[in-house]
Length: 70
Image (cartoon, rainbow, N blue to C red):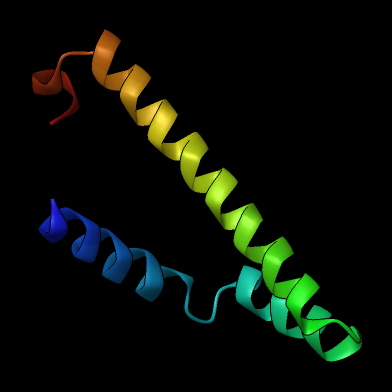
C-alpha cells in the first residue's frame, strides 16, 4: 500500500509542477493577506478533484472490463 501511496504522490506532484493551477495559486498567494486560507482552499480543491478521479476510475473499472481499457 505504501508503494502505491508514494508512486501516486510522486506522479501527481510532478504533474502539478508549473501547471496553470500552481501558477494561479501563486498569484492568489501573492495578492492575499492570508496565505493559510489560500493553502487550505487550493489543497481542498486538489483533494476534491482527486476524489472525483478516483470515483470515476472506480466506476469505469466496475462497468468496463480491464481488457478493453488496456
